Length: 96
Image (cartoon, rainbow, N blue to C red; front, side, top):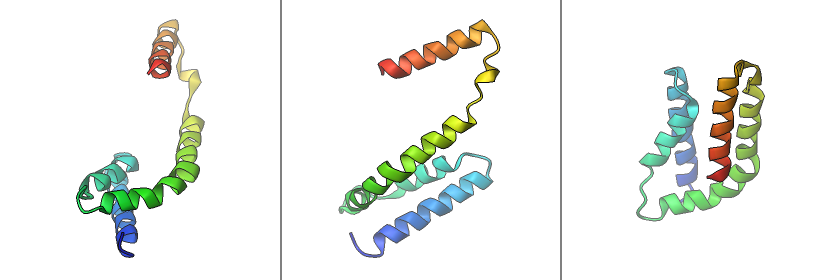
């Protein structure tokens, strides 16, 4: 991977994340869009992925789940039907 490729991909991902955040959509979708723009041929995607896999898995992924978990409001499950729906979603997720 060229020395300029990784910083360029990161800047594009951050700019698209900022754009989608300002548009009222979660920033994650902007970063996902940036990932779809990286060509799969020529080794750029594989090179950038190899360099980012470790830091993302160790730092960013746990941070995302902690932030999401802290925003969870279990008190909104006010009726037995909502508890049943939540349990069904959890069961499908665990089995999947």
